Image (cartoon, rainbow over all chains, first blue to last red; front, top):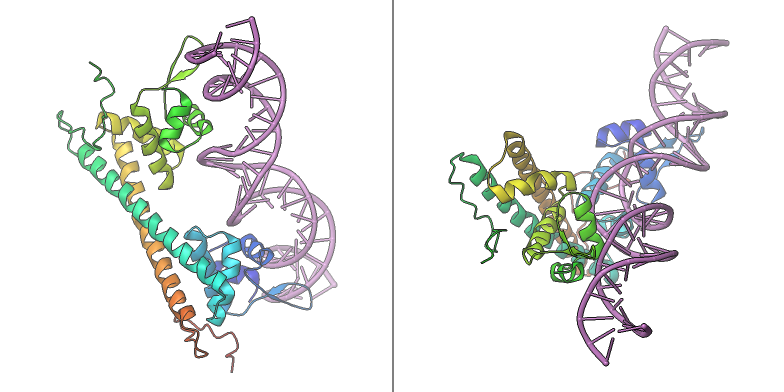
Length: 132
Length: 132
DNA sequence: CTAGAACCTGACGTTGACGTCAAGGGCAAG
DNA sequence: CTTGCCCTTGACGTCAACGTCAGGTTCTAG
């Protein structure tokens, strides 16, 4: 497969694939003319890389994780990285859920256009002009 | 409160607070000498701003949301923004959960150091040399 | 064989939320 | 009044994951 096919198949740009290769995340053969040649599995590979990027992992971490994904075995350092990233993701999920709930209650109060909009999104003193 | 107190109280840098003010997210009085003077509520305000930033909202969106948070009422545009961001966050949570599960199974396979490491993180053809 | 699409390398530009440095001014203690 | 810490504005630096442009090469359809 040429780079454009892989890019379209994975929903990214050719530039992104060259960037991944530059970062050591994706390898490619070369044709006699010097153009990149990928196996079919590259599409799924790129989707996995994108999934990691979406999860907030930097390319350096992905670079260390991918061999472990392939081989199924990992050094204790990689193991620590895995657990650390999992914990970070878990915390991020909690933060996002809290913010989503806040937005939901904001939506709820903003949805009923009554003049008695209950201004109680948060418990702290949200009344700016309550000084004695 | 001076800027340093607010910064320490909210766990951010003074530079961040000046940036928030520059972006129209945070206002401040000035002392006779020109220094910023914040009410106590600014700490909680900054925490809210941080929460939105952590959730991936850009400053422009936060700028549009904060008046709604204060007043409890919002234009239909703000309402659309709210629901759009909530949906985006919901999708982000789903992505993160999927990646965390993938990392979990990767951790599981990497944890038992038997030579029969089950290489089945994903269903697609992860065997690179299986061509007929 | 030729036109055009796709590809190559190399290099610079973009964006957002700040960090950092420079040069100076304000403020409470002693 | 001075010491020292905190503050001010202004401007430039950072970092990551690409976007974009330039100038040239390769592949493929006709």
